[in-house]
Image (cartoon, rainbow, N blue to C red):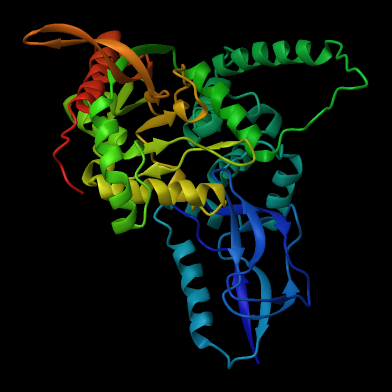
Length: 440
């Protein structure tokens, strides 16, 4: 007999804890290798923790709703094999990785918060729906900043989180005679929310009141934050996809037979995007106050609908370095694992631009919301057969063509109509001038 320790694994850069949303086994349960033991949720993604071997669950050290740290022991499994020293070594190594996480500020903050009484005090006062990093909590403790005060700060981090810089600016403004500007803005916002909450709500006997799940709440916050942050402008262009459609029809069966993957239009669209980004690199940026960060990597976020009705955006890292085969495999892999909640946290962060396929649902076009901190999102609509004027050296004539509308929503703080329009037209040009003689 041997005992295996189940610990909360590392889940990507910057992720130091996760909430245990569901325990799928009980003490005494017989489990097989790769059976799911726990469902967990971070602020980035939902995931599962599988069993490393066959065995029997002997201990469960967490409860549903608990927040566990990366490297924390959460369960034990007894196996029939001899004691596996490699498993122990692996557990120790993971704990060391947690301590040596390259995000030094977070690590220092965790070391500072050694006093359990302080930690419990902070957690008891905190709003469970508002995530605060250990570093922010440490500064709050040192400066005697209450959670009520922090909740009044309009954060500039992802999903409106309060960052270290936000808190330091608040402390600086608090020390002046003038009331902090952020607090004034937030008070106005809170008054508006309070008025809405106080308004009488009427439900008929046939209405159903449904509480948002955790992911839907995050999506809602993210969308509202994006609209409040970026002035959105949307441009449209209609592209002729006849060459692309004919080429795909001629190659999709052979591609699936040779590669074991379906050939969709998405790899072609993303390839065109990456080429256009290299022509107009200022579309591949983010905004940080009065500064623009020009991204070197081209990481394309791909909006994917989940069976639950929620939305997730897995990221194709360095998409410009992949050929069509590589893009097709990566897109299919991310899409399949998205639907099964098998994505890792680092697979849904780091995007520099986003694409969403509205044509999947038969929509011809739309005006998408920018996925912060990106400054642009491309939407592709349904491909339709339409009569069109075809120009030839011998004159113009009417023919049936495959047409699609592309729409680009962009952040007008840094992307003007000229840049947004030229980029969108360039994407369309690359699609229309697709090389039908290429082989895969």
